[in-house]
Amino acid sequence: MTTTHIAITPFCTLEQMVAEGYIEASDYRVINDVTPADYECAVSTPLYPNWSFASSDAVPLMVRTEITRALLSISMDDPASIIGQNRGWAAPISQFQVVKLFNDLNLNADDSPVHLQVWQWIKLNQKWGFSLLGLFVIATIYHLWLEYKFRQKSEFLINTERQLKNKALQLERMQSAAILGEIGAGLAHELNQPIAAITQYSEGGMIEQAKNIGTNSVQYQLLEKIHQQSMRAGEIVHRIRELLQRKGTASTEFDVQEQLMICLDLLEHEFEKEKINIKTQFTTTEIKLHGDKVGFCQVLINVLKNAIDAVSEKEFPLHSRKRILIDLHIVDQSLQLKIYDNGIGLTCANDDFKTSFFTTKANGLGLGLAICSDVIALFGGQINLSKCKDDPSPPWRYGCRVLIVIPLNAMPD
Image (cartoon, rainbow, N blue to C red):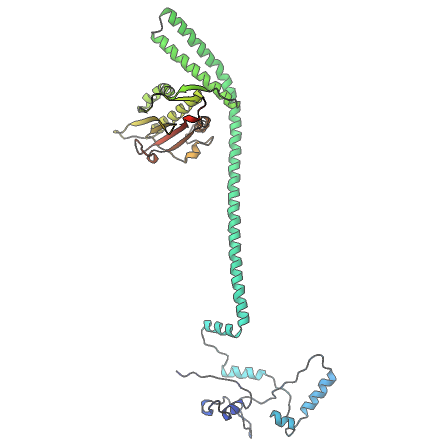
């Protein structure tokens, strides 16, 4: 394949380069040869002077006129024309004839690839090319910076919106707590009278039974249980009033195992009703705590009642049984009480159960475990919920485990 090169040169340049030995005359030809007669140099277009008439605005009109007249008056024999080889001056011809020649010869067509044209343009216009490249790099960096700031602001707005929602939820809970506090205070005040009446009637009945029949009769034992429960109900109501009024609770020393057995006796009917197999594991015979005894019993009752509800909501196969295991022991000078059940297990995060007014029960208020967490915190301990399979040594794989940890060395003397 032969490559053809086309060049435009001034008048007589081709002949001068051949004469000086730079090129061979046989390697080149003149396109559209219109050389006039008696001319030594070949041309492709009509001849016109190499210099156009031009002047600056500062040149007076008179001077420009006289210079033009002087140039046009130069003849071919004038020494200036002979030296310049221009055969005298003439009026300039429009340079658009060169453009017309390009169009006639189709010299404007460029079939080279686009990337080569771009590279050729960059080589010919390095200054502008590097300027555009620098502008592109700066624009890219600025775009990335704007995108980073936009993402940063978006995350900030999302976090702010989340915090506002949490604040609104906390405000709603505080309002609910205030309303519930007013209702609870009134309810506790109203319950004091019937509980006091039950206590007095049970005491009177016990006295009469002891006089007439004796303390070993079934009626006397039943009245004694009624009296114990009425006293306990009175303590709970009293504690609720103190809690609502932000008063401190009385601290007493009590035996943990004894209080746990009392709570199991109170829930014995529930265990029999739901056919739950209850089992206890005590590695220590006596553990003493100093603090709110009624509050501690309230925690045990609440946790056991939740375990009963959990196993009651689950459907068991015929060969399976509903089970609750209570494990009480001391580890590293801390009381550890674990209560396992094989019920439905946890349905949300551990911390959600400690939040006031959060409940998974249809008729629940969401206060049980929140109050339990506060009561255990008064002992310097904590209460945690988890799935049984997350325990290091679970008795079974499915269900829920409640862990109560109270440091014994934190108890006051």
